[in-house]
Image (cartoon, rainbow, N blue to C red; front, side):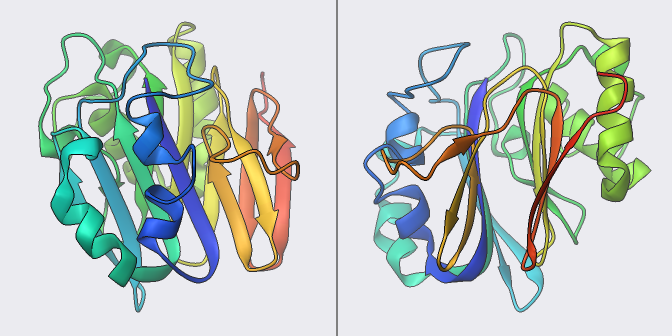
Amino acid sequence: MCRHLGWLGRAVSLASLVCDPPSGLLVQSYAPRRQRHGLLNADGWGVGFFDDGVPRRWRSPAPLWGDASFASVAPALSSRCVVAAVRSATVGMPIEASATAPFSDGRWLLSHNGVVDRNALPSSSSAESSCDSAVLAATIFARGVGRLADTIVDIGTADPDARLNILAANGSRILATTWGDTLSLLQRPDGVVVASEPYDDDPCWRDVPDRHLVEVTLDGISLTPLEGS
């Protein structure tokens, strides 16, 4: 299991989203508050952001709390759209940078919080890693992120034990799903945070019901029940 976060709005620093909040991803790497599966997220971390429409990524297989280089640079990096994650690897999956979200097809950044049987996924030569999340990401990219809802329902039907919380962004839009784990939204004056769990105790956080699709654009937020759920 993992924790992830997305941002869409005015340009803000990576540190303000990942490192500075009292229960942000940095803290969630060793002390998540709502995580149902696993106690730590020490098997890697990744931060992706859009730079004039181009997705950039910084990923590591090491724990986020031990990366002084990111902590020193994060205050100086800012973006209008961010996807970040800390990882707790599925048993048997490799621990390597290429297995760590966010994954990318050159247009989208995508994170998976959950687990899925690879037998429920088509084989993919374009996956960045052999891990379940990377193969799932490649499947979503191949089918088109715009078809995310249908893809999640299909895979969830093929693997009833799967947990399929997805977070994807393309610089102007965020799509997310809840399927077996938590997701929360915070609408701020300067933008929207989509996160596995609240990074502080702001009462404006609201939880997303299970088996829903979330879409965030600059025009607002919409929630749609996933068909067949």
